[in-house]
Image (spheres, rainbow, N blue to C red):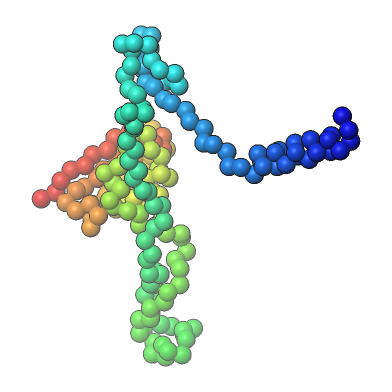
Length: 185
C-alpha cells in the first residue's frame, strides 16, 4: 500500500471514530416481565415468561406510580415575643418603671418547629422520635420517657390541619409502637 492510501485510510478511520463519539447514543431498552416462579412467588426478569407463568407484562401493562410530596421545611413563624417588666436597665422607650415591654429576643432553649398537622394520619409504628418531630412537630402533651422501660405517650390535640381528632403516640425505646386516633365531639 502506498503512503498516500494509508494516510487516507487512517484519516477516514479517525473521521468515522470522531463521528461515532459525537453521535447520540441510542437509548437502552430493557423489557420487564413478572412471572410465577418456584413456590408460587413472583419473579421479575428481562426475558418473556414461560407459557402459563406470566403474571404481568410491563410493556403492555405499565406500572402506575404515585408520588406524594413531603416537605420538611416548617412554615415560617414570627419570632417569639417575651413580655417582661421594665426596670432600670431598659431602653429609652420604656422610661416608666413597671411598664410591660415586648422583646423579640430568642428564648434560651431552641424551639422545635411546629410541623404539619396534616402529616399526623401518615405516621406509622417503627418511626423514631426525631422523625415524628420533623414531620408533625412537638406534642401538645407528654407523659413518661420514651427511652425508659415504661415508655412514653405524646398527644396531639385537634388543630387546623387535623380538626376533630386527638392523636396519641406510644413510644418504647425511642420508637413508635402504637398510634391512637380518637375523634372528639
